Length: 180
Image: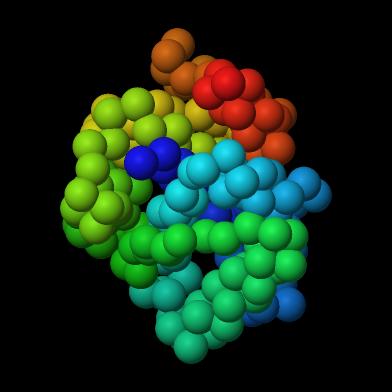
């Protein structure tokens, strides 16, 4: 099975330091929806692994988050693609849960759900915590410059093993070329 794990905010959609709190605030990054469709057409299953601490902080409800994700799924489908599942951590940043990235709980849940080892599975994020969670399970960490990506690069903490691309579209072009 070919699998790709994507962070949501900053990879698929524009991020906000004030959180994405409504379907109206959820806006796709240009080219991201079509990139997901191309992954599907190339035989990849696409799953999302996302920290959603705004839920735990009471900034939005589960119903609102479901409506945000319904919009995301609908727009991806309109672009000819599909997101197979969304795995999320609802806990606030100070929670000591195992599911909040940089911990690897979401990734272990994905491995369990799909009965697969995540070794070498591309995991695309825009923050160091996304990459650390991926590395903890042997997935292949990939950074995009969108979202917090440029700040992550400028932090000087980026591991040498991480590949950097301009955006999700550029990642998908590279993955499909490498698979050919």
